[in-house]
Length: 161
Image (cartoon, rainbow, N blue to C red; front, side):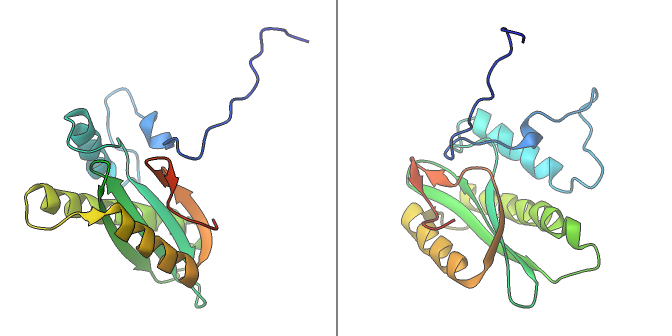
């Protein structure tokens, strides 16, 4: 047995992990079907400039009784303000990719909303209101996945998932 093998590390629930953070090609081109590449790149630039608290957006995905996909996505601006959007996609023939397709769409919508907030044309969402939206989302849909952080200020956004 090799003694220099490191034990797998646990990623805490409040830690942001998104494979997009480490994926790139040598020329920094977007990957095929990554519709939100530009939006996510711009969000990272906002983070580096100190205009938002996280380098990537977060989202939760759910399924309704008719097997339609729903998403609630958010980005922390500071300790009390977020920007959040909801989106949905009717079930299509490529079911195994539906959540991924919806993620790309909702992240583009989120970036547009972030721009409006930063330009003063839309109000940010208070963290407590995001928690209320999350509770409603949780009550309506069957959980199918999460991307990003499920916590704000170390406080969980979802109580059951």
